[in-house]
Image (tube, rainbow, N blue to C red; front, side, top):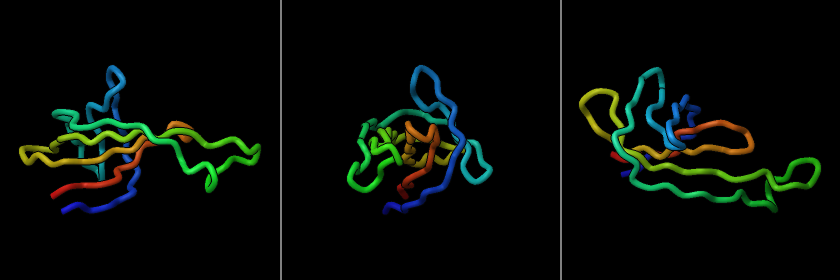
Length: 91
């Protein structure tokens, strides 16, 4: 089962990949990247005042753990806003 969030997270990146993140006050270590993809936003919905499309979003599906329990998490990086969100968590 997947749960959808939209919580901001602090992410540490090494060689362009997330290596750890803090979600709800807990530090998670990324054990491996399962998937990575890039999308563009819906330009017809989200435009900046100058009419330019607002950019790309990078998605990273990772295995991560705060302790011994490993979970699957989807992190989203908004390039234009330079911010990270936790999008989904799989049980």
